[in-house]
Length: 509
Image (cartoon, rainbow, N blue to C red; front, top):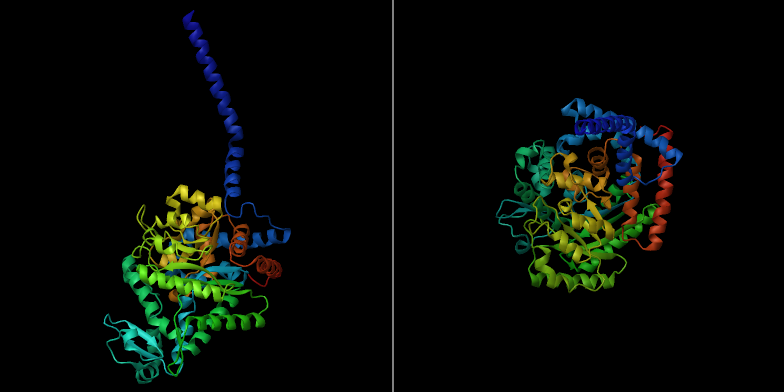
């Protein structure tokens, strides 16, 4: 009797197992599709709706995107999505996807350092031909470009020489200009050899600021340079920018110097003129930036300067940040006492987590940035390693300012498909695409960073929904006033619609 009961029980279990197997087979495709659909809904752009016209554009865009990805899958030498920007740029420049992105309205750029924002070629072909540019060399053999003789300021050990005289006496002026450009451009065909470590690339990167910044604050150069900055953004279909600026005194050809307020007045005047000439350009605003490695006394002086400038330009100076290499700078935690001296309700736009370290002082800056109530978060490359902090960023709707090419060039990631931005997109972490210092790595505008965002970090099947969400995010997370934001959306809606028509009329691809 016991054996029969056991046999019946085993038979019953077998029947149930077979039935479950049949049901699983029948629902497998539905289950599979349900998971894929759920992931698509969860990611950035998953809930963005497209009009019939936008859906047609998306179909066209995806043909080119999938074609370029397939080509890269077949041939590693053509796999732009996984290549270093310095090696990929010639291929990107020929890409149909890139041509689409160049002409696409991109909204705003919210993380851009002014003294590295303009293409190095323009600097050499224009600024270096201005009468009176000088060059000298410091003890480390690094060049300083300037329009005034100030040995104590420049800390040069060589004599000052006129750039025009050097160029004229060189064997080949074209070669001279190429070598001059190398002083302010990280580009190399072999980044893996020239910059074998993060220290090597950061040393040259920071030296380039020392080389160029003094020349930019010469009054005629300041005006020409920042006008070109606006032109390069506008020509790349960017409509608004929030610039990180480490303000210095402006000087002129007579040797006169002007306080920091003059730099802001000059920028405002340029901005007002540019907007009058280009009514669909919303303008620029300034985030006051100072070196994160400064001692407490120096930081207090900078905070006093910020307070004074913000009171004088309340609608133009919109916030405060600390800049420089995080791994070697002072952690936010060490600067808390001084940072608390900032005016109440100061908008902070703190660089945080621009590192590969895990649970070091650098990535713990993410925690302190959140505790300091940062408005947005610069880079936040390490945020993916901190699930509680990442959840806080989502809950509090704090946008991550993602700068893909910067993170690659400065040695945080080689293959952009491994960039944590892919996870931020997958989890719909608030995010905007930025360009950081494009002039220092042979780029212009914002399109190159958008290329890596959609081709490397976004899923293969992601197209216009993701792009549209990222574009509109840039206005959503900006520091525009309500009235300015409303107008920005109106301009963006109109430009976006015109672009959709242009694509469907065959004028883009």
